[in-house]
Image 1 (cartoon, rainbow, N blue to C red):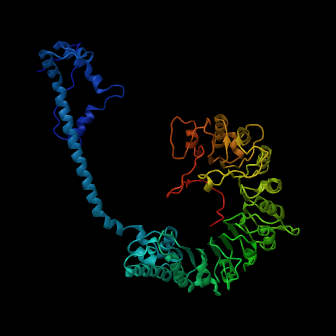
Image 2: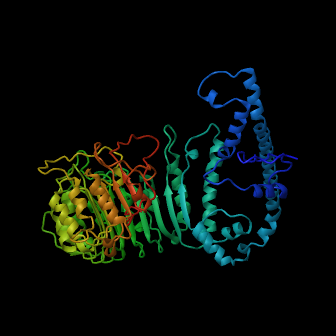
Image 3: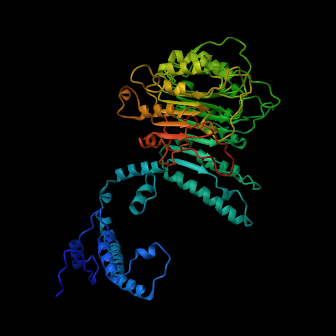
Length: 622
């Protein structure tokens, strides 16, 4: 019988060999009986008194070796081995238990995988998705448009609406000629047959077509033009079903649309035409896609988007469009200054004013206005009673002329982006619009380096319903070299400062501006202090703030041109820094992007544009 411990001694815990893994009932009950260690006590704390008692009896102390590099004597070495023996045995037992547990876990995972594999067919047969009516599955396919197996595939092939949108791009593999001509012909025949199958599956429903010629390989033959002609000739046989048409025009495409084509269902036309059109030559027939009358004369045409290198406004005025039915109009020109050796064209605004007077249903309009001659006669004023979204770019003189001559009582969205080197900037017409209809504008974007502090504050005071404001360069210009204003500017270039941010910061008492503002983007220079920015962000994002009762919560703040010595830390949506004072703002749900200027180095990869940006603005070019 083992003698009982004396009062000065405490019983040693017994270490017994473990014969089976802890997952078995015996080992689990033993673990439960043993119980976990309290959080304040570790195993080393529990065994330390016994180790000290053993070492005291043996006459050797471990502390003598931890405080020096003295090697133990032979007698001390034997004592140390005796001291370690129980722990070595316990360690071996723990390793055996760990290995047994790992083997048992692996066995269970394999058993689970095998069971799931066995159950899969029966689960699939009993799935509720098999009991859905065909009409519901068709509606799901129309929303998801994802590949489907088995019965789903059969339903998808027989649902014409799934094949009504055709996005056709000539692949690069059809441009480079191989050594075997027969192989090239087979690839081309396969591509054309796929288009035929798509058209056949669309049955008789209205179709939307988007055609792109694809990238041109250097040194390869321009086969894409010939292939596009062939595809269009196939599609023209179904022109009575065209509902939307979006294509890149070339001079060779004009002959396809020159004859009269019946387009009774066409509602949208989007043309990208950046070719050179010899206007000064006397050519027989149409010289530009804009001369093809049948393409624009559809009775149901509502959306007309033209992105072209055309400079003369007279071509647009001669379009055979039913302007009364038009709801969306975009005229985007590549060149906003006269081409080399050519005189300035007449004013586009005064030329198109008689057309705008008939656009009584126009709701969305984008115009790229080239520099032009002053009007010969005094034009008349017109009203666009339903225009809600307006975007102007190009020559500032022409833009001012539009805002002066065209009344827009229903305006809700305005974008004002004059070029830096076409004509001097003017803000008078813009400020007049703010005085008149500023309380209705919800989305505003502008780039005016000549804007003064007083004019900007006037803008803020009058746009009380503003939800989104963008200042400075557009996002597609962010990673390019900032342009220089080519004219004398007696004023200092516009800079966003603390005074502007303080004016937008809610206060318990007193006035603050733009209470509905949710998105603020500034791609102009911003000289701000961290205290002013934090005060603005905290009060605009704190749901418990009393000031938020009658205002909207901030959802996004973007500042891309902070000075390099700014006290505000750079902050990108993908960056995480626990010590950043703005981390709490981001965690509250506000999307932040705070950065110094970046000059993008062009390469094969385009610049990164955040895809999760919050936006209330209109895409005028789609």
